[in-house]
Amino acid sequence: MSTVIFWFRSDLRLHGQPALAVALRSGATHLVPVVCHPPEAESTPWGFPRWGVHRRAFVTAAVQALADRLAALGTPLVQLQGSAAQVLPALARSVGATRVVCEDIAAPYEQDEIAALRAAGLQVRTVWHSSLIDPVALPWGTRNLPDVFTAFRNGLERKGVQPPLPLAEPPRLLPPPPGIDVLAASGLATAGVEPAAPRYAAGATDARSSFPYGLAAFNGSETAARAHLAQYLARKLPHSYKATRNGLTGIDYSSKFSPWLATGALSARQVMTELRAFEQAHGANDGSYWLWFELLWRDYFRFLHLQHGRTLYRARGLGTLPPPTHNPLGFARWCEGRTGEPLVDAAMRELATTGYLSNRLRQMVASYLIHDLQGDWRAGAAWFEAQLVDYDPYSNQGNWLYVAGRGTDPRGGRRFNPQKQAQEHDADGSYRHMWGTA
Ligand code: FAD
Image (cartoon, rainbow, N blue to C red; front, side, top):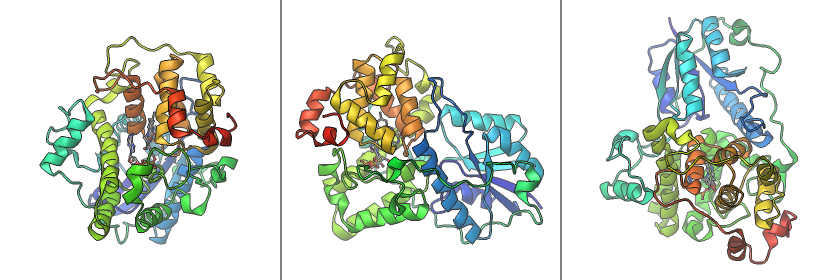
């Protein structure tokens, strides 16, 4: 009799779950699925909490929905409060497990978590599965990726590389160890361990939000994610995606897949499988192609992490520009939406109020912090990490590096002129008016 712990990380789902499939095939007779809720007090080096209210609430809802689905399969989800390094070794001792299976995440914080578990004596098997394309199918491997996205995309398309089909859901899970109340036995069942209801901020249902995650249709669950994908396709929105994707506000201008992709409630491979079926049924056009294009950006930033690892997190990034200087006053004004630049301030207020921001405005506010305020891009990336309901280490770091001109792309950064952006994307001022900065 042996027990394996399955640690859900950014893959809070049962469909398309290769890591869970590995755990189920591991030869163990018992499985203990677990989630670690990060400590409330965890702070960034920039003086604010690592988890803002929106991100925490969205992830908590995703975890609760997963717990309900697992309970229906007869397996309780163990929810522990604390860092994985603090809580998983104790859980392993209490259930008599030495093995942990989990998703492989190639970002430093997440790699350090794995190193700490190994240092505590656990055998950890990590399984890569968050990208569309399987890394083994990359024509260059992960060591010699093209420096420019276009070359990456062209290379894949020339070779016809496609994502693998997503795995079906397991019909059942292995039973937990008999007679063990895992929470009580772990000694970790203290206050705060029991699943708490998500604490939605008022902005979770704000009528101005482009992703009102406090409404049932946008909550963190796998069910809501799959229903959202189904209605997006049923309404044939992929066909108009390219024309609308630079919108600033509203539900339908872009797909809004990102929050569920980030928590893993939705698998990117599932999205692509359903998108291809949509194209078969209703025809492909430049809009449906562009969703694939953008999902390849998501992959590109993942694979850059496999190639460059921690180097992407240096102040200089991969570049040779001098390291940035932190500008605490400018940064505080930027976070609060009080820079005096109306479109930037409107966007930063939307971000803080709702936990979501369009791609166009993310680019613009990042550019403003880096190129106009001469601030440290890493502080901006950390602010996004705390605020965004769709925070994803790869896409966040990759995009910030790109705007800062410190990634692989040889062109020296992207400056977006806020006045020009306002003329192009908010000519009538309605967006600025909505957020009180017009
Ligand atoms: P859509 O426009 O509908 O795109 C479909 C999918 O393609 C998205 O869900 C996403 O998975 C992917 N995608 C689209 N654009 C990008 C991009 N530029 N880079 C990588 N993937 C992309 N995205 C995150 O998911 N998490 C982040 O933490 C994040 N941080 C960002 C930080 C900055 C400074 C910038 C400029 C962009 C960031 N993005 C991030 C990328 C992008 O803004 C969001 O993925 C997108 O706005 C999410 O909305 P959507 O799902 O409606 O996207």
